[in-house]
Amino acid sequence: GAGKISDSYLSFGSASIFLPLTVVPLGAKRVLDVEDLFLKFDKKLRNGVKEQFETMWEDSNISQCLSALECLREEAPDKSAVQWRPSGKTPREQLIPYIVKTLQKKCSYLDRQNIYQEKLFDEYVPRVMEIREKIGQIVTTRKIHLELMEVHRKQLEAEKDRNSLFDEGEKILDLIRE
Image (cartoon, rainbow, N blue to C red):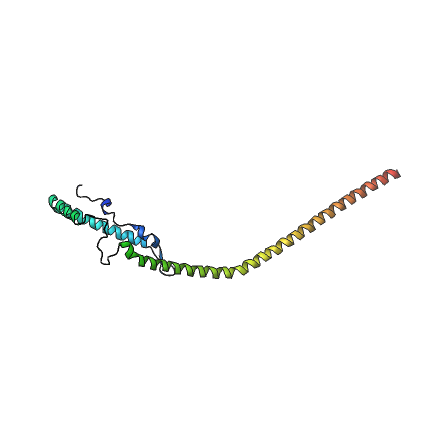
């Protein structure tokens, strides 16, 4: 009803600052999903603020609520200025060291993975080369066998031709003798 607050009023949080942090390696197989944690925190924060506003609208007089909102609007007329934070930095500036640290962890994890993959590569290259050499020998042997089979086939054809000529010759001799 009139006391409901939509999410568009609470769009101050954004997961875009956490995009480089989506997966943080913690160990051999455990992974921390920072974006998921941020979305859970954001959802709880939004729900808490909405509940507070809804209870305020339900429990209080509307004129008091409107005057409270008017006071809040007067206190913060210029939203372009940096909002107060204990460090005096913007949220993005405050997160940069954590983002850098997380990216450094990612880089070290990827470096370890790269070293591991290189070890695997170095381990498998000699075996692959042996297999390739054996395949080359098999291909060479097969070519030799195919050539020998072709020579044998030609010899069989020549023998057939010789036998057929011999039979023809005997027929001719039989005809001549008759």
